[in-house]
Each structure stands twice: as structure tokens, then as C-alpha cells.
Length: 470
Image 1 (cartoon, rainbow, N blue to C red):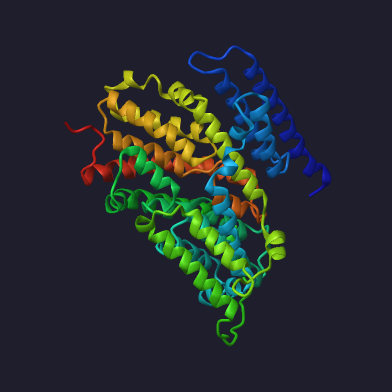
Image 2: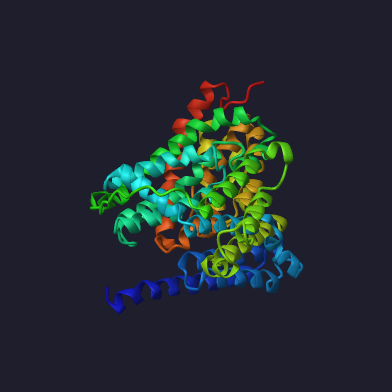
């Protein structure tokens, strides 16, 4: 690729970003639309700039994150600097750092290479078998490691080792397929379980509470469909990678586990036990992760030094996820998120004679709201109450409508800042922000199809119909 070819996309992105910034500044300077506060108007303008910069990568993602905090403050979209930095006071960024440390430990102690060699022996140089192993690992590991971020933090190192041992180039289609699966569809296995992460917990609470078993019954089939279709889509997009020759790794004498490997396994399993038993102790998921982080770095117990931790960690992840949470909080507190949702779906009650049309509009309205709100909690907090209120006005089942918009928002990722697990993969450099965005657009279509043709008929079959029962 010539320097001129490299420059052209960058120049195009710069032009698009400059136009976006000018449009955002113009929007912030005019009279606020009816129903939107001045603070909400300014937060929306900042959100558009932040999303544009995160998506185009014109600035390092960490720099864009801190710029977002500064813009929130100087635009007066928030009242105080503390409000602009509120995401940095949330548990999630620290949970992410701790989870990344577990992944680093798995790599450093040699466990990642050991597991990678096992997978490679099983697949015998067949890329499709390696991909199938990865897909099977998602639902199976969910029972042991409910958090998609934890699974991704470990698996990304395992599969990087596998690809490296098989002499598969980092920029190859096979590498991209593996990493896109980790980036975009690994998360879907978690949402099928009520204790699988923040998405099901927040959604169930907003809907009004749901038992673990009822959630599993309702979500298993739709999310299995999303996972399988998403996996098939990745296979088709990166099909040439599956024809690639993988160098076979010679069989070697299996060595016993080292002390470092054993300690890493014990610490990870202990954290997993605390995550799985949260219904008894009610600890925030960040607490077991931080305890594991402390153990892995503690002299005499851990497997790496503080210097190794500092140099091996992708600090972009911390700043991006914290800033995205600050932005989501500002969108909610300023009323901008609710205004946006109401703007998109405000006319739905007049469609009460067409229940399916109401559902279609809800599903089409969810993606733009998800695009503007980087944090899934913020999206759910705005979209589910709006969808349930519309359901009540149109004589539809509010539980079904709430779950439908959850699926429409949860199944997609438009840029890495929208998910901690996506940031883990993006930091490794296999995928560009543009590739993640376009796959997110395709998954938007998949989510709508699954919602209409899998979820609705299935829920009706198990006694949760779209029409509200009196």
C-alpha cells in the first residue's frame, strides 16, 4: 500500500470529522428544540463529537476520552467537574483493569500457550475446527466465567498464542474472524443468563424483576439464534481465512503445571466462584476482580511484577470506558437521552391498531439511541422505560416490548467504547474501528430479524404474547 493510499482515508475521515464538529457546534449554539434543556442540547453535541472521534480514530482513543470530559465541562453540559468525571468513580473501569490483569497473568505464566497448544492439537491445522472450538467455548465458559469481559480477557491471549504458533499473520482474515467473534458475539452468551453481566441485571430490574430460570427460558433461544447467525455472518465475511493453511504444531511431551500456572488457575476460579455466588454475598462484580488483581500482583503469591503490569496493560481501555460512562450519565441526567427516545418513538401511540408496526418502529428506533449512548446501562435506562410506557398506551405487553429493545441494543456494537470486552480486543490491534462499525450495522439487521421472527413467536409459544392479556 502506497503512502498516498494510506493518506486518502485519513483525509476523508478528517473532512467528515471537521464537518461533524461544525454541525455539532452549530446545533449547540441555536435555540434548544422543544422539550430539550440547554444542558441536554450541549451534551448531545458533545456526544456526537466524541462518537465521531472514537469512530474515526483521528485522535488516540484515550485522548478523545479526556477531551470528552473537558468538553462536557466547558460546554456546561454538566454542572461540575465531578459530574464530568463521574465515570471514573464507577466500579466498571476498575473491574476492567482487574480483568485485563487476569488475562495478562494467563499469558505470562504460560497457561495461554498451554491451552492454545491443546486447541491446536485438537484442530490439526484446520481453521474451521479452531473457529468451532472458539464458538463452543462461549456458552460453556459462560457457566464458569459469566462476565464476557473476563472470558474475552483470557481468550484473546489464548487465541493470539494459537494463531502465532500456527504462523497465521495478525492481519489475515482468519485472525480477524477469531477476533471479531470475541469482539461482537462472545457477549451474547452472557446475556442469556441473568447473572451473566450488567445487561441482564439492569434490564430485569427495569422490567420489574424476573427469576433466574424465567430469564433463561425467555432469553436462551433468541440469544442462541443471535450467536449462531452472528457466527455464520463472520464466517461468510472472512471466508477466505478459513481456507488458509495453518502450520501444525508438533506434539510435545506434556509438562506438569508450574506453580505460577496453578496459582493463576486457583485465583481465577476463586474470583469466578464469588461472581457465581453473588446472590448470597451481594458483592459488586468489581470486588472479586480487584481481589484477584491484588493476588496476582502480590509478592510471593502473584505471577507478575508491578512493572510488568504497568507495561502490559492497555490503559486506553480504562480511559475510554470511564469517559463513556461519564457521557452516558450526562445524557441521562440532562434529559437528552429521554428527549431523543421520545423524539424517535413519540408518535407510536397513534399506531395502536397495528401492534406489529409499533414493534418494528421500536426496533428501528433502538439503534440510533444505542449509537449516541456508548454505555449499555445508559441505553437500557432510557429505552426500556420508554418502550414499556408505549406498550401500555398501545395495549401491548410491556415485558415483551422492554425485552425487544434490549435485544436491539445489546446485540450491536458500533464502536469499541460501547463495550469493555470490545475494548479488550480492539487494544490488540487486529480490528479497526471501521470494521467493528460495519459489522455492528450488519448485526443491527440480524437483531431485528431475530426479534421479529424468533423472539416474538417463541415468547408467544411459552406464554408471553405481544398483545397484553387482561
